Length: 103
Image 1 (cartoon, rainbow, N blue to C red):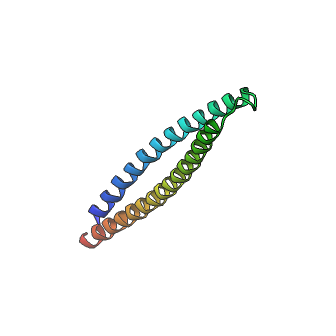
Image 2 (image 1 turned 120 degrees about the vertical axis):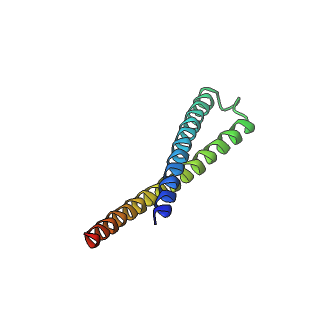
Image 3 (image 1 turned 90 degrees about the horizontal axis):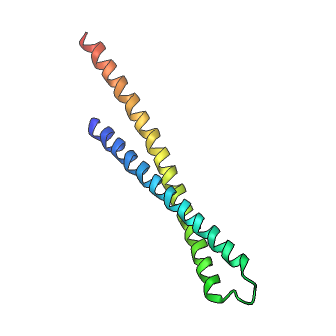
């Protein structure tokens, strides 16, 4: 049970780091998207070519995908934290029962 608890804690830590990295990457992508949108807006419709529009669409799609992935990681992280709490509570209860039975 202790190994499972430690495994869950370790997994929660890994997911937290992954979530933080994904959040940072998402922020960078959103900044890039805003910059690209600003550049496209600044140009007249005659000078906006298909390549830039496709690149912007791809980056937008990447940002959406990244956001979904991050949301999934955050949800999984929350679920793991809840599981860690449940396992911790069960461990405390088991310890209490053992202490009471040996007293």
